[in-house]
Image 1 (tube, rainbow, N blue to C red):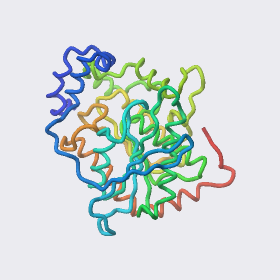
Image 2: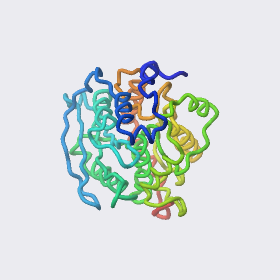
Image 3: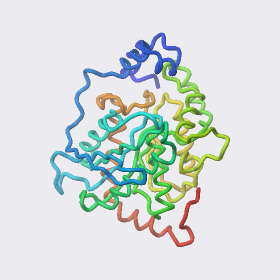
Length: 342
């Protein structure tokens, strides 16, 4: 499918940018990139009740922002919570990033759910794996321990890009350390491999149309992961750091949303196949006409709104089946499976 018209009409804004690296480093080209990403006429996101909580973690407090419906009652609240992690190559982003705040507000309205957005520590000087992951796990455990107070009966975990990596990795560690898994995972344009798999034929053709300013080169992808890990790939990469290298059995139902025009689609497609081969109930969707990072765009763009609605439907429906799923998951665990399997 061609680029969505809202994307295609803006591509001339990227003319003259020879690479993503140049677009991010050169001030004038950076201004072009920001103009491409800006939607000044976009309607504001839905309103929600928000409050900040400082969750205790092994590296210090972890800020989280809790979103709940404006009109919250047993009739309007779904009873579901989603712990959500924004993306940003493990080194950018915060709770006000559109991918964090806009996504949370949309899902609160669409699913009548509680969304807990996590301000995990960003990788950089003094912060490497597993510190961001430890923050995420601390936040999930806090939500799990406070489900009654939060008024929820079902708990999912999700994220976008690097945040999707952290969501899946957290589920793996919780499986191994706590013998518990989230009711479901929501992974949007995920980064799950240290080295990206070879693209499928359809993805290879799609990437030929990708502007140079939007292309993630292998060197850039590697530098992102080396910054997170604090090392080059001359040592074994832990499965908790790059979940494609982990044993995936025992995870809950998983939704994977891939952008059509995105190098990371190869990672999302391959990871979905690995999940299916491990017996995980996985639904993979290619979001047509979209680039990486589409959750930063207004929900009025049809594929973005459709993707958000797909997540919301799963959040609404999951409450109906949570008790059955928990019983099924708990029956899998025995004493001889305690401990990591990565």
